[in-house]
Structure formats: C-alpha cells, structure tokens
Image (tube, rainbow, N blue to C red; front, side):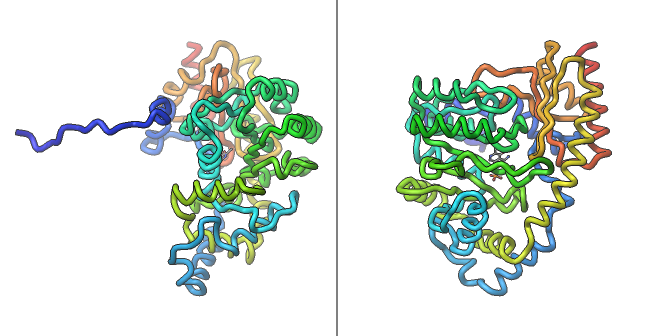
Length: 400
Ligand code: PMP
C-alpha cells in the first residue's frame, strides 16, 4: 500500500471556476528560472530603489513606534499614512484622511472594489485593452466585462455613453494616465468628454492611477475624478509601488460616502488591515524624505530607456507595425500586424531568450492578437538591446 493519499477534490466556487491560469501566465512563471530577458513584468528598475532611505524608515518605525507597529490595528489604515495619502491626492482633488482606505497595493483595492460592489452577472465596462489582473479580479466577483471601443486618445465617449445606456454597468474601470498596457495618456479634452458622459448618466467611475506620477515629458493632466462634480461619484486607486517599491505592498482608495464603509468591511474580511509596519514606514518615507526628487531621478532614466527601446524596436518590427510613444509610465504597446499572433510568437521568443506579454491577455473579449506589451523600465540599455536582438531572431523564425 502506498502512503500517498488520494487527492481530494476540493470544491471550487463558480466565481473561480472560470478564472483559470492562462498558458501565457504559466509560461511567464517559468521565466525567472532561465537566462531569459524579460520585458514582460511591470517591475520598476531595481537598481534605483531608494533602499537605504527605505531601510532608515523601517528602522525609525521600530525605534520610535514598536508597540504600535507590531500590534493589530484599525481597518481603514494608520492615521499617519492616511494623512500623507490625503496630502498627495489633494494636489488635484481636495481630500481628507477619512476619505482614504489603505490597501495592500492597488491590486487589493481593485479586488475590494469588485468584491464590495458586484453581484455575479453584473456588468463592468473596461478599456480595450485593459489591465489583465483587473479583468481577473472582477471576474472573480462574477462580473461580465465589456470593452469600451477606443482610439489613440483612449476610451471613446460616444461608445461609453452607448454602453452605459445599454448595459447599466455597476461601474466603469479606467486607467486614463499611462495606461497599462497601452501607455496612452488620455488628453484633457477627452477626459472632459468622458466626465460629461459620467455626469449625465451618473455612472460610477473607478479610476486606477498607479502611473500618473511617472511622467517624463508633457504637462500634468488632472485625473478624470478631479474634474468638476465627479469626486463623489468616483473611486481613485493609488499605489506606492511605482514611485517607491512594489514589494512593500501599500496603496489606497480615495472615495466619499457610505461606500468607504462597505470597502472597509470588505477589507476587514479579507485581511483585517494592511501591515502596520509597512504603513508606518511608508508614511515616514512620504513625510520625511523627498519622494518627488526620487521620482524625478527615476523618470529621467525611464525616458532614456523608452527612447532606446522604442528606436530599436521599430527597427526590428515588420513594415506597418506601430509602437506607442508614451510620455510616462512603463510600457510600450506594439501592434505588429502582418498576420503575427503574439501568443504563438511568445514560446519562440522564450526559446530565443526573451519575453513580452502577448496583447491577447489584456482584452476582456475579442482580442487583437497581433499586439504585445513590453516594459522598458526593468532592464538597463545594454540588456534591452540584447533582448531586442533575441526578439528579432524570434520574428525571423516566425516569418521563416
Ligand atoms: N493597476 C494597474 C493598472 C497596474 O498596472 C498595477 C500593477 N502592475 C496595479 C494596479 C497593481 O499594483 P500594486 O498592487 O503593486 O499597487
């Protein structure tokens, strides 16, 4: 008799039954093992983490607030962090600390928003393309996602209005600034048109803004929810992942009214509260260190890397391919055309030692399979060049 127990069939809720790991994600998971240059993840340039300053903040917390840092605490978040968050958000939307719910990264915020507001079968409108882990999170709440047709300026207001009137969505999820994956920054005029539609229809906006501060050229554009009359009808999601460090896992939701209490109840059920140690260290960093100066340094590096990657990428892509030219954020979005299916190209690219995310993953439905997302921030210039040589070889094999 074998000692190996018979595998038990654990029940899987219908909410998760349809949310499977994709072949792409599985492939990306094996990347860390080999000598593969990855343009796939949205990982900041690790060599620019302010590691010493951040360490000093954690030291400060243990030296000055040990009992508080190590104890259970309240669900909405630490007052020090909520105050710092409110100050940052107030640069564009007047915000008080009680309008902030701290989250464990903005990914948790996305999950909580879905969990708090959606019933199975409810409709959520998302961009085409949109952030794939948001699609996954909303799907786990049973949502039906419908993509809003878009153009070079982002979601189209006429299409948005039509979809709102037809489907009565629970909310509209947008990433207007340096969108993931497209890198598009919606111009102010388009934001005003979208805001008009939202005001007219009363549709709720969930505005995800983890990249807004990573601007290296062009003028600051206010969030859609910062436009007149929209703050009370919107939730704004922010994160320190891209301006400080994603490993810390701190973000927040800015919102008003009773929904904040519902979000807090959802958060309590998921994890009681975010790590107090982390919250206090982040609050200390935002208060005592110059994060804006840090961001200014990092975005200059990102700009150079965008320039370098974009120039070389255009050289290796086939005629007719297009590549975005974002003013900030982390990603280039390429449409290859020429019958190239990037999901089928990925295994060839990985054999050549380079990875990207096939565009297919970013569509709630009807994907454009010739698209791909590449992060230009993670690798230094010489690694980017080598990675693109490998991609060129993969493309030659595809055509060959
Ligand atoms: N929203 C968007 C649009 C993202 O691109 C990401 C990270 N890639 C997140 C949310 C989640 O970020 P985090 O949980 O690290 O704050």
